[in-house]
View 1 (cartoon, rainbow, N blue to C red):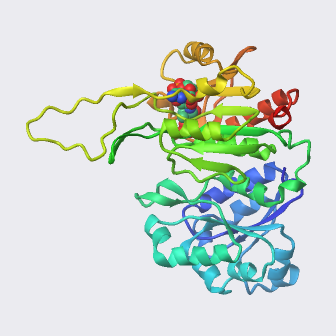
View 2 (view 1 turned 90 degrees about the vertical axis):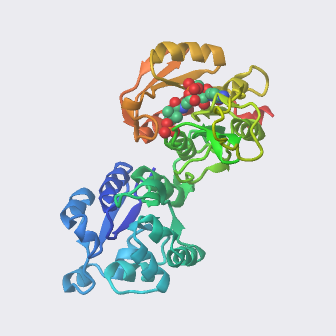
Amino acid sequence: MLNGKRVLLIVAGGIAAFKALELIRRLRERGCSVRCVLTEAGARFVTPLSLQALSEDRVYSDMFSLTDESEMGHIQLSRDADLLVVAPATANVLARMAAGMADDLATTVLLATDKPVLAAPAMNVRMWTHAATVANVETLRRRGVHFIGPNDGAMACNEHGPGRMSEPEEIVAAIEALLDPGTVSEQARVLAGRRAVVTSGPTREAIDPVRYISNHSSGKQGHAIAAALARLGADVTLVSGPVAVADPPGVRVVHVESADQMLAACLAAGRIDVAVCAAAVADWKAATPANSKIKKKAGAAPPALALAANPDILAALSTPGPKRPALVIGFAAETENVVANALDKRKRKGCDWILANDVSPATGTFGGERNTVHLVSDAGVEDWPTMAKEEVAQRLAERVGRHLGVVRPAQAAE
Ligand code: PMT
């Protein structure tokens, strides 16, 4: 999809610089050429040699190198690119960009460029939430700099919160969305004109205003599916429970908390061609959530928690009728008899395909980067190898594209 595109990747000095290596690999797999500018601090985290080996191009660092400036001046570096990507974009580099400084090659190129700029911030959570960084990011956004992330999560500094650089696949998706989706070949956009709803993440069911029932879903799998469908040209509504992962680019996102809200948002999306229910929806909610915090009373027994069933979104979307999407896909999160339970679940819920995955803690499926799925359909059971969640998503989106190739779009049916 990025065939022939050229990215100038500016690698600044943060622990997330190692992800720049994977980013180069992913971009090059997609036919995009990558040229790197490495800051002095960046070179403390990754070597020019690694960047050079992966990009198969020289790495530029020195502002005052006579050879660099005669062979490839800083203006030329920008001219030769379709997009400048700063990854990781540290608090320091963002501050220098916002201030319009040009005190090294990276900031000079950024100041001199007339090309779009995408920044993938990465820093300690307090640096990210510091008023100075917030103001710098606002300034840069106003000037048209695009941002991807940062994500929430555990950080190298043993802290937790927003500040983790987006994953390479997320950055690639943002790059693809920026580099003019119109240039993507129609053949690659097999889902153009198709409408999709994807559910993702957990739901939260209130017990009282401060407590809730939920689960460990991170939204990584569902969000990756939404992004993959959008890359193939689908008009995607992502209905997401509370997650720390960033909204995927090119996707309409509806943020919800409870299963009731998730169902309402799915139905509000109107006529769709394909529904993918990847959310880990709580099966039960508190029968009567309290309006104020339930008090702990000395000596009293713990209060009983009466539960009520939540609506089943997948079953509701699978209900036969004129409004049923042409293709309804569910997931089965199992801890035992994974495929057998999924076969049964597919029948009970009435969906077309179900992707069975083992969510036993040892697998790391919940919240992890990889997944092992079994695709259950009328055609039988297909065991997919363990893959990155983005790869599962891409493969699924391609299957959806092939399947819907023979089905009328929802708009036409209206
Ligand atoms: O979010 P990640 O950390 O990336 O993890 C991904 C995942 C493990 C959450 C995902 O791959 C997955 O398995 N999602 C489905 C989780 C789940 O709730 O499975 P289930 O077997 O309980 O439900 C079966 C299907 O019914 C699912 O499609 C679910 O979305 C749907 N469902 C369940 C209950 C309900 N009330 N409404 C529903 O729509």
